[in-house]
Image (cartoon, rainbow, N blue to C red; front, top):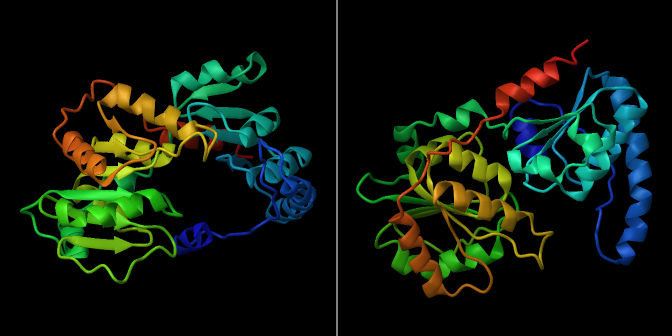
Length: 310
């Protein structure tokens, strides 16, 4: 999906082999251990051909061989950490970076002194066009009217089975009050659901800004990038983060911070249909607290990257 999204905006895409960095014992770790060096040599070949002035990394296990290859070729690396606590891939990559940017001031306390010297609190980079959606275009795209509030449900590019199931089980009740835009993730469309005031998409590209513009509230996972967009747009948000059983706990950490700063809501664990509906109602009626403005790091990060231009 990322390949398609990148190519849709006219950016060249190249893939490299990579191995997932698991924190637990798995025989797949043995196989993936060989993929990292393969990815390193692939990345090295691509970087030599492309001759970039700088490599910008957002983390994730795919970034590790690329960052290592960039360091080998003496290409400056700028890393951005989206979550409050750094992931394993970034922890490995930090030592190869010239500059480390973080979304949250609180993240600085997680960094060792050696890394702290090259770290900067920038905020998370959010595209300007995401923040300037067209309300009329949003209504035309969804086919919605202006008489009922719009609820946006998004579980990330791969979707979120738990959230998708809860929404579909609650449609009769929710559509009495809301019109719902449901981003279900790749391969998760349910063609059997046909209800007035409800539309579903695998993912949204350019239309997302317009959908944001008409949405009064969102239900989402705890991914830092989506939360940053919703914070800058000052939406009401119900967060359903991945549990610590399904992740390293970064989404729960992110969720707690946004709840504390902006008066958002959060539920987790085994969630019943009734709990889901009642928490949406509570969140929608919540008073927001946007005294703490969220910092868009786009300009600061671009300035840092341009500083390394040859």
